[in-house]
Image 1: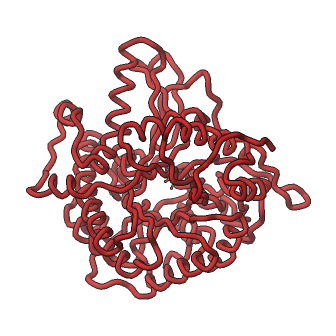
Image 2 (image 1 turned 180 degrees about the vertical axis):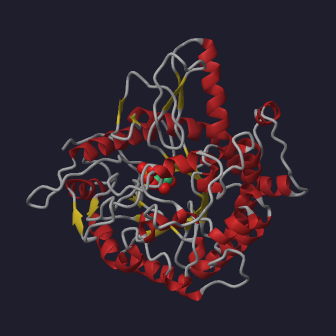
Image 3 (image 1 turned 135 degrees about the horizontal axis):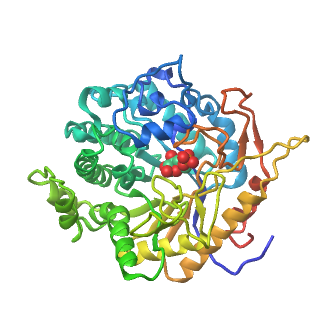
Length: 480
Ligand code: BG6
């Protein structure tokens, strides 16, 4: 353990992060309708489905298994899990609401009371332990009916359904939830439209047109949600949520630097500019023209967006990205949503994601100096294989090292002048991986006995990192 000189502000929001579809299970209980995650099989096939056009959204038990159906059974075990979060000293817990628990088909006029009551119970349990919920309204969980009947976010009808859903949540939970976010990793959509926009592009050629139009619909929907949130819960804070990986140039060749800047703009800033600054960025026009993108922007949309910027930026940070204009002679790297070329200075996780704590300091500086609104790191962590020792312990020093280095970088960024609200490491309890559906890709402080083949008792146990993080929180980041 090292004593460190970084200081986190008083009231810093330490906690952990999850998403409904990756931990709740109970996919058909409580009147819930099916959603996107329920039709995604586990294993490597999932990545293929995510990256190729033409997915059929059907469940076929004879060919695949579906790990999100059971998740880690948080639906029935939330009390036990929340007690463990409280034991670690969590101030906040990031979770999402499954849209199809509230509106099973997505287009109904009135909500499903059983679904609403479930989240009441979860929020009450959190608040009982002094933990504030931080809620993502849509985290890769588009109701299946909206996908099949409407083509998901390709269709502007979803704006209306989303607004109804968001208003229902704000009205019901106004006394229990003050921190909200609209769409998880909204900017990931242009690469993996299926996750965030709920549709698989009709062809590779159509991907950009369809996903940028879908994004425009989400911007409108997000602005309507921000407006409603401020009206219904005046003391709330509502943010956007970005996947952020700073883009480095492979070398000092100006061609590569310009290429890296363009990648950074379109992937990292396009959505933030709309949701925080309230307008499409200057570089958008040329990008649309060069890529044959023609947006249907209706009267009033731009004004609505302008008048309803978010209060803060939530973002996920796992890695940086290195870019080179001509990639042919260099090795590529894989990553969260989008990879680049291999960075010779960085080591990678077992899934090939490059580990770069300084990149988090870079991200915080970039985002804060561009937008000047509070930042909230709502995902960060190391997906790793854990080994259970014969005495039942799990010695995950690699995870502690990863998190320590990233927390140090956060402290440096705060010294740089960044306004950072909080930190909720991803998958604080082991859960289903979004990109691969694996259970063996573990992020948690809490181990869950559940495996890729579906076996396991679902029993929870504390890893070494559990005790370490408890100490980090207790000392407000002074003891790392
Ligand atoms: C983020 C998502 O992209 O990364 C999470 O918001 C996801 O849903 C997390 O789980 C880690 O990715 P993965 O693929 O390792 O689960």
